[in-house]
Image (cartoon, rainbow, N blue to C red):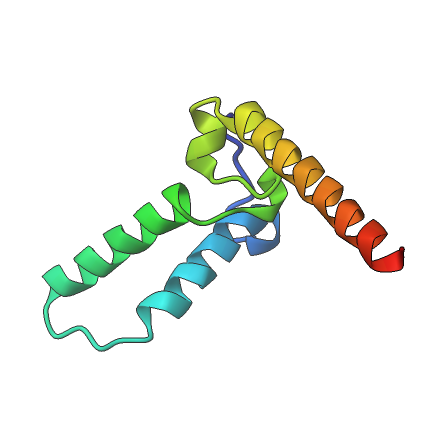
Length: 99
């Protein structure tokens, strides 16, 4: 991971962080917050969800935490095993049905 700077006051060069902010705003705006502590708690919950639970398509349907902590290859390997097992079972069922 590296730090990249974009042109100031030019949102097109900072697309990823702008998209993140838009996603966060859409979630935060769903509720009314009467106290700043409630808003802060909801933002913290969103950041935790976004970084630790939400799968990101650009990361190969992994969470940022999985990629950061080096679990990506292990997870991809496990998913591949499940996929191959599922395909094998489907072929077996299809052979029985076609016979």
